[in-house]
Structures are given as C-alpha cells and as structure tokens.
Image 1 (tube, one colour):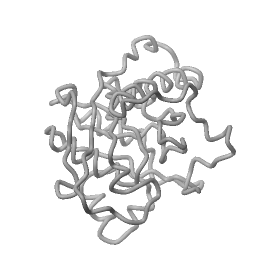
Image 2 (image 1 turned 60 degrees about the horizontal axis):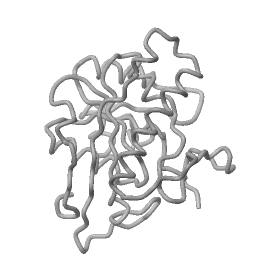
Image 3 (image 1 turned 90 degrees about the horizontal axis):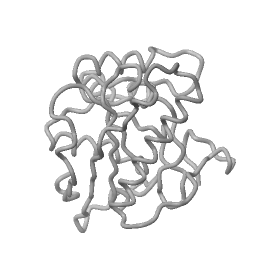
Length: 224
C-alpha cells in the first residue's frame, strides 16, 4: 500500500489509542478494507473485520482471516455459522478495534457518496457501549474503482483520510433496539461520515441520501 499510495491522515488523534471501539468507514471500492486497515495500523491499532463468509472458504485467504481473528458473516442462505454481532461484541469487550461498514456493501450512489446505512454498526455500539468512530477516505477509487478488476500502479496516488469524533448516541440510551431507534441512530452515523467525506472532497453532498430500494437496486452483489 505504501508503494501504491501516500496517506494523508487528518485528525488521526481522534482514533482511540487504547480500548475497544467501532470504526465505521465509507465504502466505495473493494480495496477499502486494505486502505482502512493500513491507516489503523499506522495509527497504532490492529483492525478486526466483519467479512463475507465466502472469503473464509478461499485457500490461503481464508486461513489468514481465521488466524487474524476476523469475523465471518453469512450474507445469504438460511444457515449461519455464527451470530456476527455476538462475535463482534466479544471482540469489542476484549478491547479490540472492530471495523463495521455501515453501508453493508459498496455504495450505489452514482457520485460515490455514502448511501443509506444498515443498522449493524449502531446496534453493536448500543449493545456493547463502546465508542462509534466515523471515518471517511477519498482517493482509493483512483487505485481501484468501484467494481474494478485492475489496480492502477502508477503514478503513486494520494489517499486522504479523516477521523471523526465519536458519534453521540446518548439520546438513544435506555431505548429499546427497535427498528425506528436503530434507523434514527444509523442516519446520525451516516450523516457524520458524509460530513467528513464532504470535507475531504471539498464538495457538497446530495441533499437526499441514496436509497437503493427507491432505485430498484439490490444491495448485495455487483451491479452496472
């Protein structure tokens, strides 16, 4: 990654140096987990991911994922190997940094802005009581565009990353984890990520958050 890109990290001191937290980044390239992992490592933290279970069945890659303590998530099918939220909560209680992509998959927004989020990240934060840290990055698409098949090696790119303040979830304390509460808290998280990305891009985000359902798009798998 250091050969592919130079990293400009803004407000890196906002990432907790010790103790458990949930890192919630934007997601627009399949290279994102490597980029976010590299940034966290540079800031002194080792990331743990919720990863697609199919990756754990791949030779070599699956072995590395299992040995490094990543968490499998079954995306389809009735049988689930484990409860990913329960596993991630355990990791959080052990004082580790857990990366959860709140969008669940690569954004469908045409401009690569964050789309409507899923509730897993805020549910985990509310259940575990650990800080929820929004993160935005920009520049990864120059190395590997959304659903791209090739990596651009030259010239060396610049990836800008901005770490946000913990999302204030105090208004949801004591409330049940009902769908309305989780959607409200998730909207707060996605707004925080979008503000960070707008600062990095020096652009104004769309007035309305992209909702795949309103555009007849699947939220799983690739699309044109």
